[in-house]
Length: 461
Length: 67
Image (cartoon, rainbow over all chains, first blue to last red; front, side, top):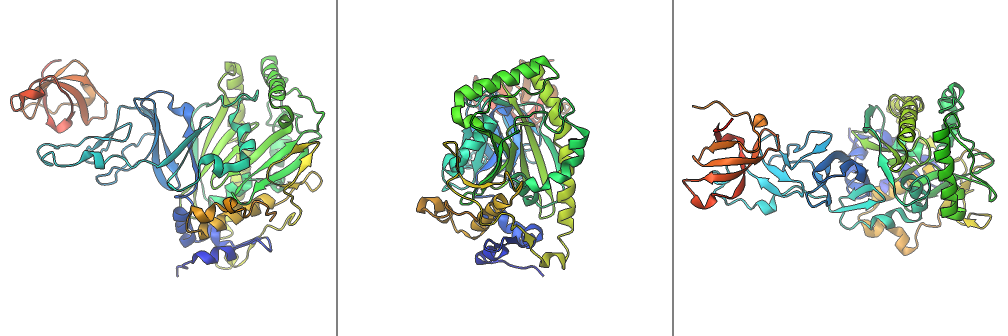
């Protein structure tokens, strides 16, 4: 029998006081359906990258929750995001992954739409509609809020959502590491290669919480460390930049975002990486020097895996990539992974990174295969009637996070759990599920934007 | 009756005859198999259309007049 959850029930499913989360939120079909309404129609979602639609007429078919959307650049160069559904009978008007076109034509009855969304072609308009159809009212549904932040295109269906920069708040410090050039120059990244897409038999929240800061699962990747999939055969990443760094888990419970960070010592200097090839090594070394000059103290922050609530995760250093965990039912996630490089990098650097990315991430990547196995079997083993009676444990490091973390005069934004000695914590995951419960219970953005009322920003979970 | 015109093979500059008996020059082809962008050359039903650009639906294309 289906269980119907009232909004007030969600705080019970996420027990913040005791660090426990019900398995129901991962496996229950009713909760999944509510997520589509309460989270995916209201949150800012990552849609694609500007470099994918560089020319007028370029398009990329993306997804917002379960909904297919078209990201495109119109003839005037303006970027739009549209619901990929014909206004006549709902057929997908674009069934390609990407391309360039003057119009999107519905294959069902032939209605066609310009790249600015306007309905421009209606078969038998004169004879069957007697020219009485008001075309101006039947254009593609435009996603009402969209922003281009340093090349990343984000959108939300909720007209009342805060601006994107307010949505991410001080998490911007960490997101910038992903989108800025390796030398710290603003923006300057582009997508390389195609978008890898594959299905994982797991709820979308498993990978989202994994990437928000699960250092505890490093044991899963011991085999790739032993094999040495790094470019020179040393470990996974082939760099010593994390040596002597402090390990910080950083989250924003009032917003749901979180990341792993490594904080270099105040007297740290750039270290060489990828020394098997002098061109590659020189590019990254010179870029590090430039970044240090440009960023000053902020250069000490080395970004690690992170998640922007709800379903965009990223790796800002290497392998530099973005993943979106598209929900495809409670028991399935469609993963899309974008790979980023510096636009200005020499071709040999881009090719070097492309090879490394493929080896590390995606369905062919050795590291990501480890993760998928975990999510797959964890989900399957949580679906049974007995299994779902028992909560997951998220108690690691409870009560040890602070909101005023400072090191050598550098203030670190967010709720910070120093795990340098502990090596792992679950504060970021608790923040993620705290926000999940907020979204599931809140009626609107007046309630969700708790930081405007001074609520939640000091929470340490 | 003329054969069905395969719109994927129609090139800009070619001339088509329409269901309304109008003729038009193909300006561009989005190659969706459904629409053509055209400029009217003749239009017995509506002479004011001559010179105007329009989108033409596949089922309104009767035949290709030029190869």
